[in-house]
Image 1: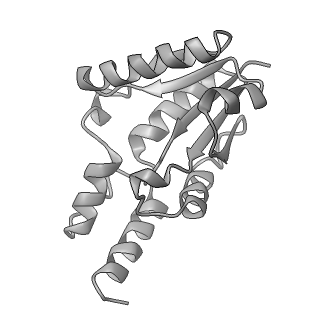
Image 2 (image 1 turned 180 degrees about the vertical axis):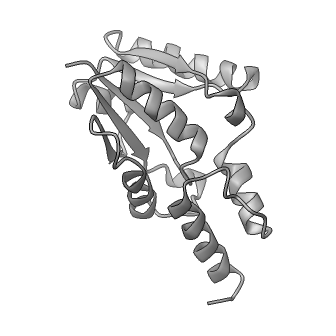
Length: 164
């Protein structure tokens, strides 16, 4: 079975992430969307919340599952017997950082390949950071995230703004 890991913070999951997940699901027998603990990034959503939001988005993809991890990515890939790590590239600016990560992962475990996937053109500008900023300022994020993520963002920012 060919297994790929698609790691990320997913704080929150966007339609750009979903685009890559759906396309990776056609290329691999199994795709694991691996939500990174990564508390250093100070996420808006807890690990449990992020994992739940990802899980809700995968119901129509039978060969895709969500999981979380807090180890080295290549160690997690080994544990899951994955052959590949999927990384999204939105723009040239993403490439240098992602390329360094891929080379480091190859040095740590040469058996796990990194596959770069570009989202559809519609999503090349999209990032979780931008979505959170739009939501925080009261903007409409409906076209950027799944409906349940939009609701979760609205709840989170209502709470932060002192509204119930």
